[in-house]
Amino acid sequence: MRHFISLNEWNEEEIIHLLQMAEHYRKEQLTLKKQLFAANLFFEPSTRTKMSFAVAERRLGMDVLDFNVEHSSTQKGESLYDTAKTFEAIGANLLVIRHCDDNWIEEIGNHFSLPIINAGAGKKEHPTQCLLDILTIYQEYQQFKGLNIVIAGDISHSRVAKSNAYTLQKLGANVYLTAANGWQDKSLDFPYISIDQAVQISDVLMLLRIQHERHETAYIQKSYLQQFGLTKRREKAMKPHAIVLHPAPVNRNVEIDTDLVECERSRIFKQMNNGVYVRMAIIVKLLQEWGIIDEAIVEKRQQPINYRGVSCS
Image (cartoon, rainbow, N blue to C red; front, top):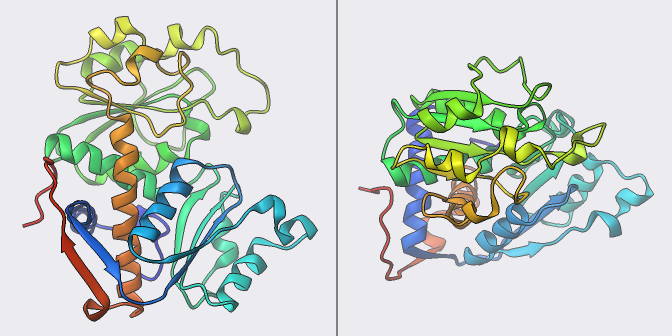
């Protein structure tokens, strides 16, 4: 694995191994006894992804080279490629990139001598979000085969939907989609059902944010919750064991009734917590693959934790 670009490139065994690594790092404090620099190049706004990468990097003992697009040379016309090349030239050991272009990865190509992590590619891919989502599901059910998982919302503009649908199918889940008219993505070969059908059959209901910044015209939010969102009435129709996910940020009272964001079946904030450990696992895996780190520079220390998660045996 040279870069972490898409989970489409990973088989089931490799994905489960990453989940196990993430759970391992939740229980064991890990520090790299070597000065390493991580550059987080976020060309789009981000809270959870950017900050959880920063926390993951600092927990590993890495120095974080922050990047603010508003105060960078991109304002002078510098390209993504040249910005990334600059960080490589000054000594970064890892690049984490988020960009609005669906195909920025093709611009980067194979011209870099350090690992690159895709932290979001336009409307196309969001593999680290996908990995933390499936970790959250695995913690709940310890498997994927036969689970009914419904992805609900702004499918056509969502990189989360695209990354999750195919990965979950690969792992054996039954994947369904639900969306308002005009927000379907016909390129995704999964059945569409109504939101009322979704709440009845789902073991996992994965809600998506309305991607206002990617819509050409404004959408009237007032009626969205009643027509397509998770209302209290719909939540009561869900299976007793079913859980609710959302990649956030959450538009309260739009995709989901605000009282349900932290209800008993919600795993929204658990997803965020999982993001730190998933990203630690990806970083360590890449640095090992590149020969940048080995066991000799890894310091481990057990930390007590009371947590029911993925077995690492």
